[in-house]
Amino acid sequence: MLDQTKKTGHRSVVVNEFTNSVLDPDSPMLGPLEDGGTLIANTAPGCWGPMITPSLRGGHEVTRPVEVVGAEVGDGLAIRIRDVTVTSIATASGHDSSPEGFCLGDPYVAARCPKCDALWPETHVEGIGQDSVRCNVCNEPVKPFEIVHGYTVTFDDSRHVGVTLPQAAAEKVGQNANHYAALPDGSHQHSILNYAPSDMPATLIRMRPFLGQLGSCPSRAMPDSHNAGDFGAFLVGAPHDYAITADQLAEHKTDGHLDIDAVRAGAILVAPVKVKGGGLYLGDMHAGQGDGEIAGHTMDVAGSVTLQVEVLKDYPIDGPVLFPLVEDLPPMARPFSAEEKARGARLAERWGIGELEPTAPVSVIGTAANLNDAIDNGLERAATLLDMSVAEVRNRATVNGAIEIGRAPGVIQVTFLAPLARLDAVGLGDYAREQYGV
Image 1 (tube, rainbow, N blue to C red):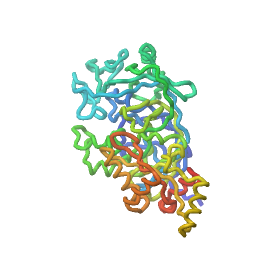
Image 2: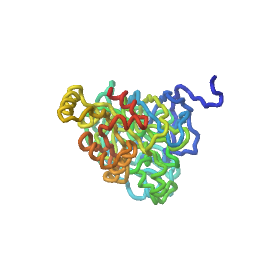
Image 3: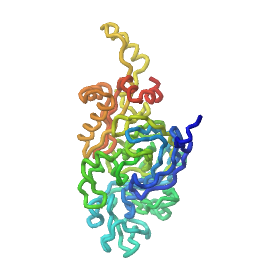
Image 4: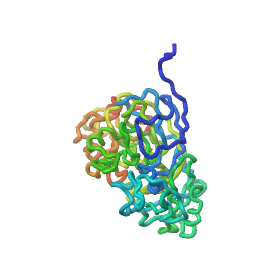
């Protein structure tokens, strides 16, 4: 007989609502989504658009968190990324600077008008260019960020490649920015296309879309772009309302802001649950990015996303684990071929070793204020996950893996072939089998 007291959820949830760039566990969640259900979302661009919209408080504009039935603190959310499709026709980006006088401590979190001194002022757009965003009260340009060197890029109809535009074309796009950005109806941001940068025209660019933000709600109100150990470090001792201590950052963040280019269609991401219901959210889709996102920003786009989500009970670590596509694995971490296994078996027999241990790829995410500390964080998480020493993880990542950079200053992946029995012990083995056929 069906247990009438057990909470049920929707088989699918469609999300087209956004936060004010703050992830707040006390705000009502959407849903609920049933365990194993499908989430479909229309996402808004992250980074530059929200960065030039002073009323937004986190540097991104992500979807409102969704409750997943059965997700309890200490569990994980296993997220199969079914589809990531770019809907923007064009976007703009570039390397930034932060002019003085336009923020209280952090331009991502606490933008201010330098004339009327309002924090998080409401603004409007007049014309195009880097003075186009203006305060509603005093009409002063408000620009917590400027583009030092930037580009406007438009995409082909099949969304395979993009080309960067010369000045006249970039300005034409900027005059109808919201259309070319395909901003969702619920988005509050000013499109960065209004800036119309054109410092790098006639460059051909490959598209390889992925999600820069995908994860679960932190257990304390936190600006969305700072839900990770590197950007989150800017909150420690900050002068604005979202200041926290280092211990609070470690306790509450879920590392949903990854900027790892392997978080794309076909991958499986496992996120830690730190609030009841999980609070699954996403956004900051990128049309493509090289490892490190070394310019500080990449091609932020609107898009449509389909995810399938299930609850993983008793998840043992406080950060994400990724099962990338095979082609996204470093060469030393890829599953062994049948020929390699046969050669290894013959060698093992020659030396009386017996059966070789079955292994499968896994990528454990580490974050911190800098890359060295992020590597240590990733190694420690991997050791806890697989119940082995950090020294053993170092060895396995050296001979059968790699350390990869997601984002500077401090997001990395510890990717290696792990004993399948250790993955089974924490409920991850079947995801590895599904992904790699091991």
